[in-house]
Image 1 (cartoon, helix red, strand yellow):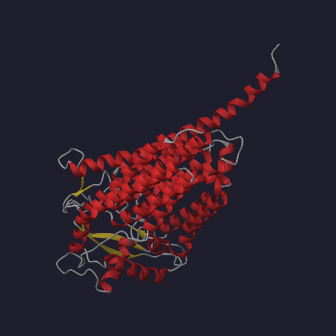
Image 2 (spheres, one colour):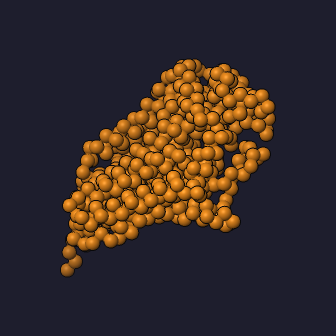
Image 3 (spheres, one colour):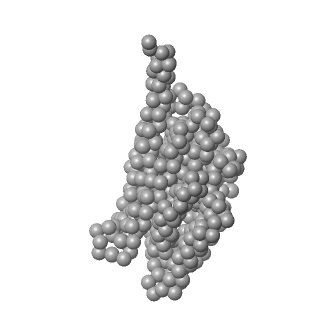
Length: 484
């Protein structure tokens, strides 16, 4: 006789399989994009940003095709804060205060024509989408919001988040391998160069892996370093729980030390300093989480720190220091106070439009007039009279309020504060493996004081997904019915 149990399980299983199938497809799609985007020049080109938004849209639609996922998304404050922020940027794009027209095709000089607009609503700059405009920045910010929302809604298993961390770490090792080949075998086919499509007359610039900017390669790598430390922490915690040896964890930590070596090659000044602080702090955090009484763990940590010290000694006293070479180049080709000037002028730009901002993507169009007014970067032999044109303030904490005002920046700050507060509320559930990832994210936000990591497609996508996945994985630990 057939028991009723069979019919009940048959009734319940399709729904469970449906949710699990959606999770596998969504996480596979997002993970594939996270792996791919660093190799597309870090997402510099407009088409990579459109492609990222397309991947995010497909993942989002798949995720919300389940009623259970939609309920989870409605309870996610980042979804609503991000939606409000995107509506704000869309309003800026629909209400332009100026039209930017390139003065000549071969020079980075723009003429601004004032347009009629509603002054009490957010406004932006209408320009060539393929170069820079508020609409392009709308698509830029749309992509991470879609990816994060889809991940939060779809993920039901802790293994999805852990798999993402492992893949990010492996991608970091691959990036390291390419950087090493580029540095020590300059005749290799991997020695790529970048020609600015908007400035083709400038000489080709060598890439760091596939990143057009050395500093951004470093930012990507210490997020990968954070992922590697998280993998090692997971292995340590599992070994301690099962009473096994932690040998595999030390193999992963050696890979982390290898990633550390890349910071001495990419030439990024701030990235090198931040990574040299972050690595030993993250390592100590892992050891404390895995069992501070084990002499073997502390001995292994000491070996890794000594390895880092050896790298520092080589960098400071070696005759082939790429970082020192680049520092010398910047000292002779770029005034020492350039970034201080950018910070000072950005503060001046914030004041006239304190509440609503100038509009997303407006920095390149607004800044030249401020530079001329204070007699900075003047060069009469250069078209337009300035020797420096830039899209970025090299300080995201100032550029975001400059472009979005207090109102728009409050949505971004709200997302950051919610993430910090939720992480603190989760507390011990994050474990050491979660905290080292969040510490890497914090390091990136510190780096944003002197550079523009939040305006790099690959770095922003990796940052948002790592933080979201780490918090979601920790929150799933509180649910006894969650799959591993």
